Length: 333
Ligand SMILES: [Zn+2]
Image (cartoon, rainbow, N blue to C red):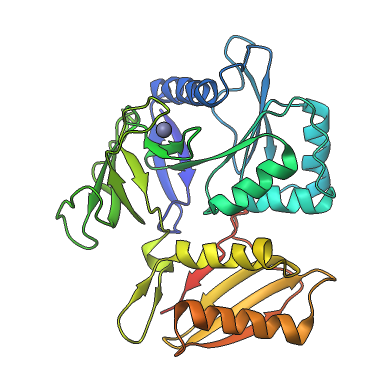
């Protein structure tokens, strides 16, 4: 039995126990996912894992090697590792990838790269498309947690299909056990099907999403998870009672950077009180201080409500969590 430390959706560190058999299943799952998304992945290809901890395996009988680099390493160390390893697949946090592209002038020096898998943090399709354009490879997102392992990952049509042999997922009404119908937004609740040492049954992931059974042309028949709109605790509240999912706010921030081309390198949006929003940003030389601050304020209020008082602060850096995770949308309300 092996102990694993998790800082899952609750934000608290918890100990999880896994039987060794669970790791073999995880290993096969990772390989199957990569082969599914990049069928030409061959035994001599390598995966680079940029993460807080290593997988419990580093190859399958010497093939399909996984090379690990800690995501808290400085960008130059990760960039040098990418160059030295020349992986076909990179699994990475979106915020770390963003930083690497920033530091390397959008060049990852990796000829073999065919697939980037983002995980662990929210990112928008708009930003992943942007990464794919820059890196010249496919960029897809995996939705997973330490507690439930793989929950869903995107197919080539960018739909999140459930990974039904890893976890049994239900959408329940938040704060109750009422099961919701297909298409209804609710809390993601899952039962881990691969942990034989410490069963987790109906674990509340504290994320909001819905399921639908529409047909996808990729050929998978597993239900599709849609409207993955982030953590319940990160949703913004409005004085009239409306709840704004953090995913919607995240989409708004990417439109500022990618559509409106504001010079923003990093950001953090915090709801301080029911009416007060703080926007912390790290800017580039292109940011026009008064003019662009006004655009951010007006755009937020137009999008989410004129009752909000929005203040913009230019900061030198945005602190990360101990695990290196960047939480861009926070609610203190
Ligand atoms: Zn599909």
